[in-house]
Image (cartoon, rainbow, N blue to C red; front, side):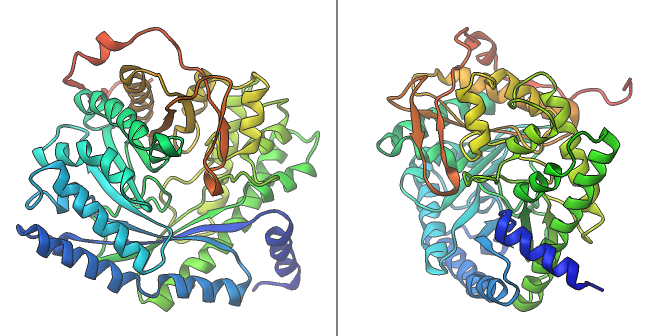
Length: 454
């Protein structure tokens, strides 16, 4: 039973500590839309998305009003489009036409974003997958709500370095095609290793082929709640600190579980997973960086940062997993630079560099996320960053990702404004030494050995 103290405590989390359900994401399988005729397939895709998602926004608003819980985004994820379009799309331009249909469909149902303009190429690329990847710059430049992801590696298959090289070029081309908007197309593009099939967060959400025809996945966030709890834990030992984080994560996750169950019941769609991530926003007090400060760091990036983040990530998962019947997605702590004012402050203070961020990605939920870099960064350097993150994910059997934004026309010391949840951020310097010869080798980095762990 929930008592009055817990009700008041939850109200305080919502009103004073920025607790929210970050997203309700409806996963939709498009496998039954496959057709050799492109126009027929486009019609089927549009009709299915609109039919399945027609009540998503209204149900989200009903739950918000009834329970007083903010639901920031309503989103859709679909089967990777490289698989859906493989039979009908014979050029990058054909895939762009499919991206535009996705954009039209989500606008029709008033959903914030759609994810799944994706290709899974960790071992190799089919012609259709290469067409889709090469179409990404134009697709993101000519749509508003489509998000794209490409999985280039996994622990079981290794890293597809041909795809890594290509993605460095694609990211730079996407930046060029949206340079009039501070290269914002790159904010909707992420490169993964070990991408999960059930991630509700953009830009990496897609509906895995092992999923049901439709599914509800919910992403809950509460860095402000954890920070407030730790304000009352100054000077305590690590065991007590961990217990505080764990208990708080449990309470936050229970809110998400309630929303997930209600959304599932009202939409008549099975509940998939709850992603219990600490996802920051630019709002003051809603920062993972501030949590690290409460743990005892002057700034993220100081010695001890990776250990503090590892502790936080683990306790969030331990607390959350007891509060939901199905935990999945990414789950843990996100460290996007432009979306977290505390991270921005750390970069401005000189405490946080790309190299330290890379070290932190070994123990957090994702990887180099929402990092603005100079617009003249070579494609090979971006590919090198992708390869580094993919290697971390492959060896450590975890999800890693790269979402960097080469801001055309801007350099180190300047700032970029994306607006909304995407925030703003400083342009961070990239190591100037070349990795071009390494990237040009091509082929595949083999999967690591699993027998001799020590």
